[in-house]
Image (cartoon, rainbow, N blue to C red; front, side, top):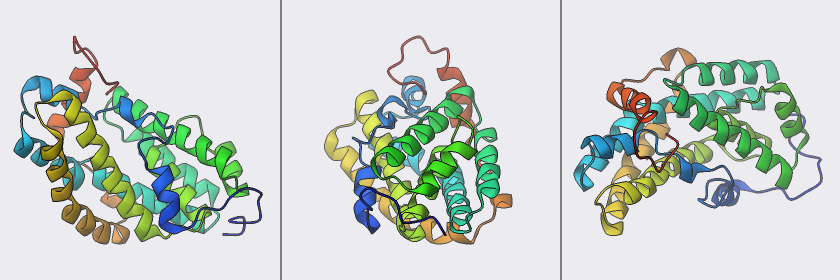
Length: 235
């Protein structure tokens, strides 16, 4: 990519960048979203370690985890080619595919916040160009994939780290919602490592035509969460 370097400011390298970008302290507001997990706990679908692991594995392999991974890779490819039109097209599809208003807010608020934060702290011309070319709603995986290629982070590295980070974030939400202790949550995180790694191997060979999810209860749960009486999370 022609504008991947040559700007002022620190240049994160490889996995080190991801420790910052995907950490709980990065200012994207990830702590405010549960991706319908709050409704699942209220409805009794997630009540213990086993049900949490099953719920998250479905989201990863058959739901937004797989879809977001595909979108991340195609945003990465658009960045590698310096093709902002292709990047905008991937982003438009990503936002349009959000199955509810809350899940659209979840991805777009985090995506725009991520892009703005990386642009401010690790500036690159490519980030400025993307920020100008994209609409206010920027899907989170699109922002992460594009920022990674601009900063020379390998696609395989960012894909695996992103998928695992999303699962960790949801486990953290579960600890606040369900009767699940920290040790049980840690076991769930450990148990999701192998599925994340396997999915990260498969995703780069998929096209945008392979996008699709089959987590209907979670999608409906996100809609019901919009009118849930008591809520800690925004989704």
